[in-house]
Image (cartoon, rainbow, N blue to C red; front, side, top):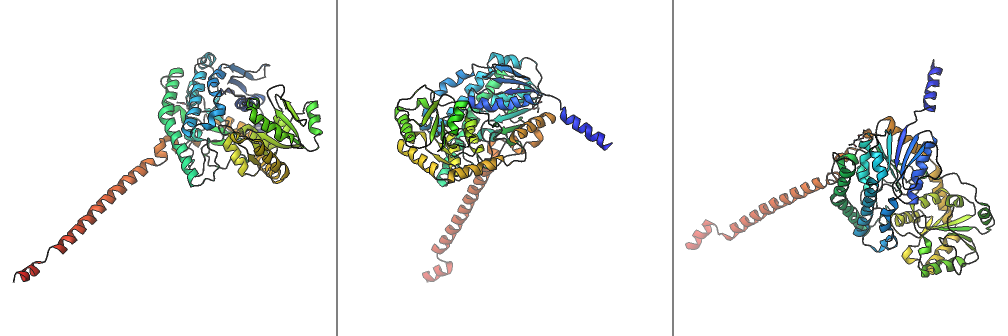
Length: 518
Ligand SMILES: *[C@@H]1O[C@H](CO)[C@@H](O)[C@H](O)[C@H]1NC(C)=O
């Protein structure tokens, strides 16, 4: 009997109902799509029927995987792209406005897209909708359209906007805003600046962006919906972070870290690359500024600095460079327009990774335990590199300061001091030491949201409070007013008493007066 029961349980697990899953990954950036595709492809491989909205449709069909192409999304980013290199000179209010406005443009572009509108009106049924959450509040209305739980996916660690959706505590005293270059260890001045970032971000979001998103929601999804309602109706969020890479910070129970889930077992290298790597007796330095930035856009001065620094080291260098050639290239350097980054990082001869400090690159380098020279430019890159530096496996050479002297100094230090490689290996061990693999964790929670028709039982009560109540601003105001009143009452009582005493003193007693008259 028991055996039979066990058999049926086993059977039920093996042939778990394949579900219909909608994925919405609209950000037109290869790094964002890489993550979304990895997740959705895995769900398809595990037997679910996947529909994927993205700007990057597949060229060859994949089983269980249907594309809804929104290729024109790239246009929404064009006007922002030209500012990428300049962003670091912006003051913090402009930086914050920049990312929110970019998020808004992307959201509008998606919601107004013909193919997306067709999907919304198609009466299609889904068991769960996975939305890449990147400053795109209005998109969350899709949960209502398909009457399905919404699982959010973030390519970033938790930050101000996702914290807001799930009412996750993130005190300015030790959780740095994602656009700062701080770690959790801030001095008084830095905490002031961090508070300024967070406060401006909250105000701008609540009083400028949210009304705009509410309008988008009403225009493109349904005029009966309210932004607050759909926003806090999200079931859970999968975060592309882990304490080995980001920092240990508070998370409410429906924020789940799956950082490292996209890393695959390494593929074999192309023959010429394999030889290049194998024959590098002194090791290899990998240099890539990621998929969005082009090192071929560096100024002449910066290119010269890089070339001269590379010419001085005995290691070989593999450089992701987007043009065919570069004059004055030292003989130990090989240019390639595209690098199989993960497979190269996995090679035992890889000694160092020179990176822009993007989230994916940071995770991959930690996974394979390779130390880093970070050349951060914008967004979360400065913070990623600052954390890596604090964890002892990286040296930061910010893009503005990139010179032959700075880069050569960093190369010399990191290639000759074994502590960086040791720390990178320690981090790698922490990342890999998990009860369940990050990918299995991700799939579990997506299926969990489906099984329970949403996971609203995991939501903290904080989501029902507006931001000022959540941060106890209302109580602080009441206490301040009461304090001021008490102070005033006390002040007038004392003043009155002092006045009386001095009057008594000044007025001679009657007896005394009588004596005077006599
Ligand atoms: C809230 O989520 C549930 C599923 O978890 C869905 O059925 C419902 O339509 C959603 N409501 C809104 C207002 O988004």
